[in-house]
Image (cartoon, rainbow, N blue to C red; front, side):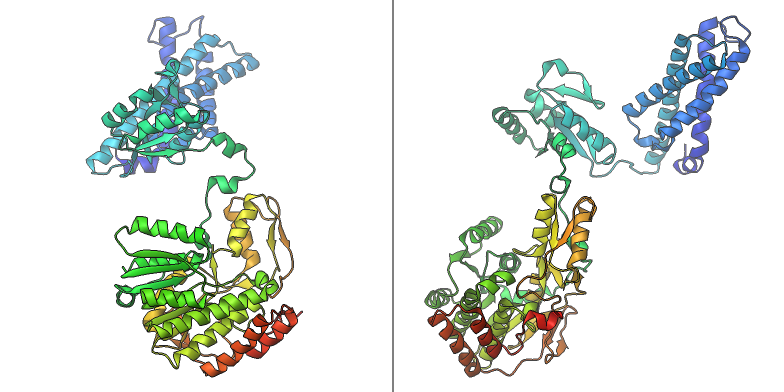
Length: 628
């Protein structure tokens, strides 16, 4: 049978063959009952009633098959469960015929006759569908087409309980063709030889290794839920001795009954919310700057810093030096990179960029040639409430590093800046703007090329809105948004870091590179999308509430100040602002004002803000830009 021709006529052919099955089924049962292959009038089955039964059976069978969508099955993928269902539905159809005949007062055969006829009709249906399946597969094989997926996994399931039943049904329906289920392992001896969802139990834990070897198993699903740790460990140890990949599955009853489907069913792909194209890089130029160089990353344990470390290692530096004050996250990235690059020179240092002497010691010892400065206090509301900490860390920490880089002849120094530095309305943004001014001024008198890279929010970074939304959704809501109209620029962490690396290939010194962030995103729309991607409905399953703008927060962010103009680079997502006219004498005067605040331990917020306005002329109060 040709696959293409069958596909064209299947909607006509299958119902017609079902009708033939009914006629043949009744004929065979008539012959068995009357011992005659010629249909004639009998006392057992009046011929008029016989014909009426056939017509009723054809109609009812067609209705039942259509209601259960039997005709929509892809025949070459049908399983034993499908064939059993054909027999069951045929029997049900004949019982319905018997009930209708009884209601209509038709002298019909016995219930036993109808049950047997239903079985025969179902069996004939199975036989002709098996025939079609064989013919279709033969045609595909003749044409050199393999209908089964090329990467189909041979699967062994551990446990013959409720979870295994649900998993098998999922694999046989929505994941049909991805796995070939070879069998089930269960330690209950009484279950040996029985089937779960049509899959046979073929042994116990002692047979796992042999079955995996003989059946070429490449995947094992461990589905037992109610098992003590000792037995679970023993079974998994046996599985580990095979070449199969082992996956342990959660309790499906917990998933099904849980009100919190978000965290249990899937992780949200935040990148899908942006629709941004992948970044294309000139890796040769990046390699020439980073390859075989000593590279220092401050804030190496943070979300941006750690990704910088990952991408720097792709270009095989002579040494990677990671600095962070927070030991736990620094330890995590050190373990990750040393595991991936065991022969590379990777060093993690717990140190505070505020400590001028410590920074000088590190620069003297390691002589970094390229510095990525990502360490900073970035949380806007926290820095509004702790302004002197932002001054110490962001301003004077950067100042310490800039001077150390200049003293020890670092080739390139890259400051990771933020769109909040543009016309800042908060202390954090203002301190980052002053950092930009520091590197531009220092560049004029140093052999080091000092540059900054400015971009907006990164999705998934520590303290960003997305992890907060995900946590709130996982807890059942509500999701909190500060203002319905608030917008922000977003990009992913890997994209931002890739563009930072590309930016340095254009650096000549003194530039502020501005990354193309695309269109601004409404935070309210982002919250709605996250809820919907979790399979939930905003306002019904999860509420969105508005909490009001936080201290120092403005409705929108900018990437350029009024006095800045953009120049293009060789990359469509990277632009350069015109250098501003600052000198280190100008900067030192500004820093002296902040030194006075720190020395005199001034904590009055208004005094600090007034000083910030004098030192950073573009700094304004939030209400000036929010229209409040």
